[in-house]
Image (cartoon, rainbow, N blue to C red; front, side):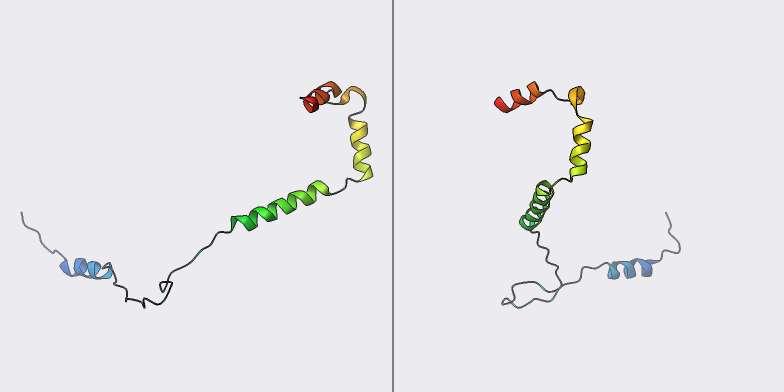
Length: 92
């Protein structure tokens, strides 16, 4: 088998470009390595913000118009849950 026009120069150039670069040794006194990113996740703060937002929505007072609308909508037998079912759930 004969191989003609083999471009070894381009292969060696590719290998040189993809050769791992050795990093300089850093001071043992430095706590963090150079050229590194540090990411910290503070889920406690996110959870506290979500809880505060939920508490604000729960504690917000409803307008009289909204309360009257709901009273009209569920007046009489229009309520999707019977009073007996609500009482049974509370007692159980």
